[in-house]
Image (cartoon, rainbow, N blue to C red):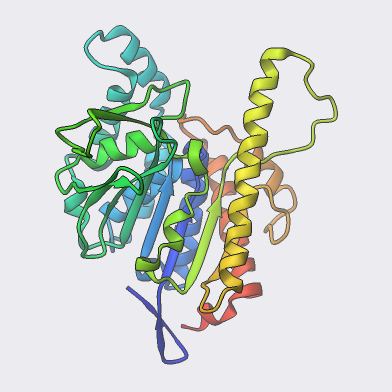
Amino acid sequence: MTILIGNEQKRVGLALSGGGFRAAAFHLGVFRKLHQLGLLWKLDLLTCVSGGSIAGAFLASHWGEDDALDKLENYLRTSSIAVSSVIGGVLDPFHSRLDKLAATYERDLYGQRTLGSLKNGPRLYLNATNLATGNMFFFVTGGNGEAEMGEWELGTVSAPGFPLNRAVAASSAFPPVFPPLKVERSEYPAAGVDYVTLSDGGVYDNLGVNPLFRKRNALDYLLVSDAGKPFSIDERPTESGAAVLVAAIDILMEQVRGLQFKRLELNAAAPGGAHPVWFSIDSTIGEAREGDAAFASAIGTNLSRLSAPEVAVLGRHAGALLTHRLQTYVPEILGN
């Protein structure tokens, strides 16, 4: 799938960050704006993390269906799955909290779809973190290519029958609320490994941009929708030993976030590099109404249903930021 710019076919990839239902609703705003601009169904690649995987997998599984956006919004406004999944996993001795999470995804979002069933949509990456190797572990399908799962160090295997709901559950298994997903050798027969345990993709990179740089994907434009937790200056930093751990994790994630944005810049500066466009939920530059950035950033990043005003502001803010960045940095996209 391509867009036509100056009589040349160009390929566009979109990265969807983590951040719970807040991120999913923010990305929904991006989808709506891209649809309005005539670009949504022309996207060539989606790479997703955590809350971004919830939204991206749903879009890919309903590719080309205009009412998919309304269905996703209805889900985000009426469903709360984190609490029920945690309690259910505690009370049920035969299934983990993550099993319960995957089951809710199957029931409410993806049905019994497998990775292979999304072959005709865009190339889709659902990114998790391999706790054994510390690498990004991806589930990839679509683009009329082979459905696979794996990572660069242990290798990849064909996975057309792997359930979509389990792939999304692995990508959104944010610790410590959800335990990691255990994938046995029978499903992932990588040499020398009896099993792998996969946690939230945000542990490795909450932006999920790595697949954008893969040469095999050969993208011309890289769009990054960042709805993760904004890092803000604390005028009264903690003095508690326990709270320092939380603050340290936030600092580490912010460092990775900054490095990934720098990678986008360096990639663009290289010969033949793709044009990058990114925007973060706390940005006031380009916001449609004063206060939208602050309101959107203050919404929690859990998996609890969102109110109508929250969905409205998240959607408006995401659409406004995307429009501003496209007009400012890659206006040629808007003339396709």
